[in-house]
Length: 393
Image 1 (cartoon, rainbow, N blue to C red):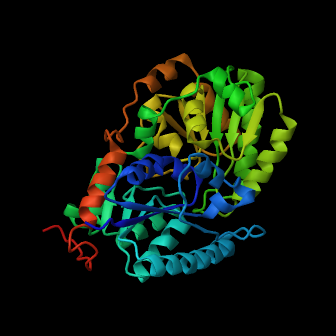
Image 2 (image 1 turned 30 degrees about the vertical axis):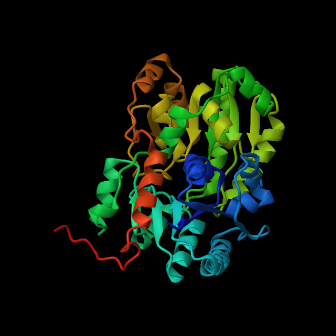
Image 3 (image 1 turned 180 degrees about the vertical axis):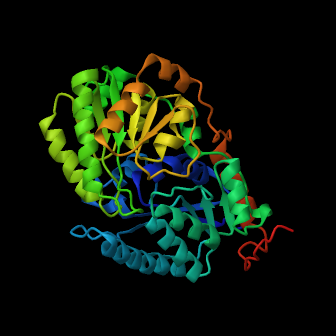
């Protein structure tokens, strides 16, 4: 039987870290051919050129599709990037005609790739549909992806039910668990000493792992939120003795401004903070395992930390709508609120509560399930046929 060509798209470090076991299993399958398409922040020097992490893994890259304009930021720059992505991906899909395009998550470049696939007759499979994040434009990107996709791999029961309520046939929806949860359970971690050496910063002290992205919905003042966060972190270093390991923002509108503030602040605090463009998945998860707390507004703070049982402070509204486990405290992006939440998070009482958190995302061998189901589905003669809205009958 002819090998189906499966195109997989990645645009950010976080998404690649989640997709990594899926890519490894697809690459090892003799009954499939993998085409990894790299785009977005991976190819941007201003966002760390994280394609180097893919290259370091020895993962073959079928195409590099640059879409970002290094000098631009804001809504118009996002629209221009989407325009460029649709053109680049459409040309690749039209030439290579893969059996399916597999995408993960909720970013604008992923929506653009899925649109390009739809325009060129390539069926789409979508990982992590059905989630809700009311504080980011990612929310509607994600739901648009659901309506484009022919095959769905939501990460928990609640999300799977939501995908079906959106009119997707239950036979196309597979609750496989979360890839982040799988990574946490299966990846070998660095101990604090080895992690410190790798990062170039002493992480044998109590530290917070921090990531802060723009809140792209709700008209918030991102710079004001960042100033409040930085002021709170300074105060917590003075009073609680915490030091900080920071990973920079993603390529959303406002991300470059946040990163400039991180760089300026990091230069003033070389002994108590390390600011890095990217840690890579192994170092990031090792840091999460060793941290006194996770701080910021990254999805990993609410999705992945429950598996570790690490205390987490979720700042602002970016992740509003996601299920929250017992290890997560939420607070406004205001200095005193962040200080109070962090002090509670690092208390012995709350640490004990956090350790008992139960993750809703444990699906076992999530990546293996995705690969097996995907290859079974793409071989069905009717795969990719026009979708019929499911009304619940």
